[in-house]
Length: 246
Image (cartoon, rainbow, N blue to C red):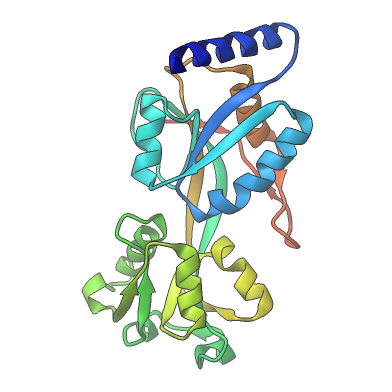
């Protein structure tokens, strides 16, 4: 019965496409904080243009998103890492800053500037091992001769928002996506601190499987991401760049 419904839906989408309409439903896998925060606004803008398209955002681990994309369970995937696969095509989605945050009452909040060595004795809250922000952080510290065993890890949490809350409760300091911390930064609950000579960022990609049939709705959304601007609250708009091949 599910296959019959799916076939009927594809036929409906095909007939609509022949008439110049863009309708349909697609699943987009998402593994990153930037995707969680940016996708809703992007989808809202897309649906104003194509109101008959329904987009479901499925949040899971980075590995799970790419596995689902390869087997066709999602139409598109947002991830901070490109996997080498002959069927996958990528386009740049966003460049995400990974920043150090501390509680408003922390001594570093007054000066907002530290050295990398200052991190060694301070209780640090980390993401889980598979998280992209943790990977970027450890790579950046390794380049400055700081290894994981040198860090004073107070806690490991598998959710960026929970880490921001823990920092606000003065459990420790943390490196998180700027987008994940944006609200608490705005209300002053946490403060961004610059680490001298340590600029951390990661590229976020939108991926699709070239082996799978593409509906018009999927193609229009792919092109929409590549040609539109995302507005990050009161900050300057960010241009989403062009397509890159795997």
